[in-house]
View 1 (tube, rainbow, N blue to C red):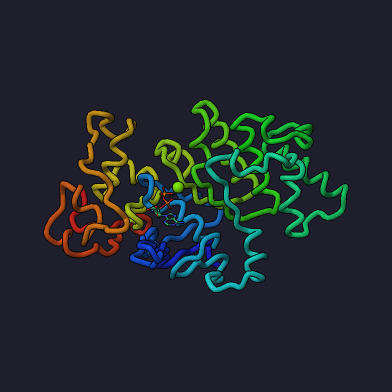
View 2 (tube, rainbow, N blue to C red; view 1 turned 30 degrees about the vertical axis):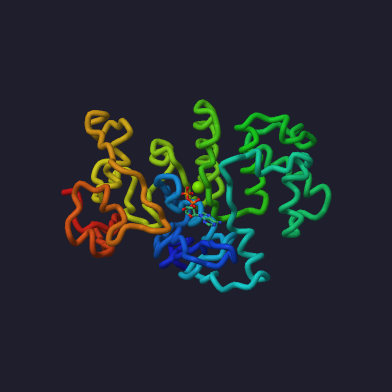
Length: 324
Ligand SMILES: Nc1ncnc2c1ncn2[C@@H]1O[C@H](COP(=O)(O)OP(=O)(O)O)[C@@H](O)[C@H]1O
Ligand SMILES: [Mg+2]
């Protein structure tokens, strides 16, 4: 068996753009473009990048909640891209997702007990009443909610508690891999650390593997073993967290990370302010998509899309003129 739980190869997702009176297809947005990466069992890969760069699309495509346009998703050694719905059912149990907004993803008319029991029902787990109840209580205990939560409704809980309910629901089917799509972005700062620590404890106790999408680079550094950076649908750099903070090769990564104070950098004094807006993914700049905002850009960067350079076995980037 491979040490990798999940391997994504050349994954693409294009969304059609419809226009005109007849609603014909007039173009496409390349939300995810030729993205490749691997995650080891028990590892957390962080995924960062500005809003709209394709993080959610990538996370959902891996689980086939939206269908990838092309590429391979190898889960536990098997390419699941062409799996039929029946084949996907068994895999789906092993791959779960936690969303940003814990309220929108919980049915307000269902009790917490019913919310947690639903995925077990779908997958035929703990069908016997006593076993079901024991499992529900175990799940609540795992996310540190009291047993009397079972008969309550989502609105009776705080934002952080609701996210704990969502985490318990994901755990209900005993997954191996969880896509955490900005799971703490909507929570108060004081609560964020508690939920992040809970996720880390669960990962250690249950041997979970995470793709952790986040805006907040501090949170990502804290929870991730490695971090991948996306820009306009492309993965432009991936490395161990400490390496990215101290020795980013791609100017975009450097700019992104320079915006946060950090012990290993010069702090705020070294901040790089990016000029210009993110270009439209419908009409990305030719060559490296970052070139119009890049202070290191050369003629080559305007013409060609940079290939992957291996800085080390754990550090890859796409840039013709990297930071030295
Ligand atoms: N269902 C959709 N139809 C058309 N375009 C979409 C759809 N979902 C996302 N997009 C586009 O794909 C790009 C990436 O979006 P998204 O994955 O949500 O980014 P992020 O999560 O990084 O903010 C954006 O340009 C967005 O407008
Ligand atoms: Mg998103």
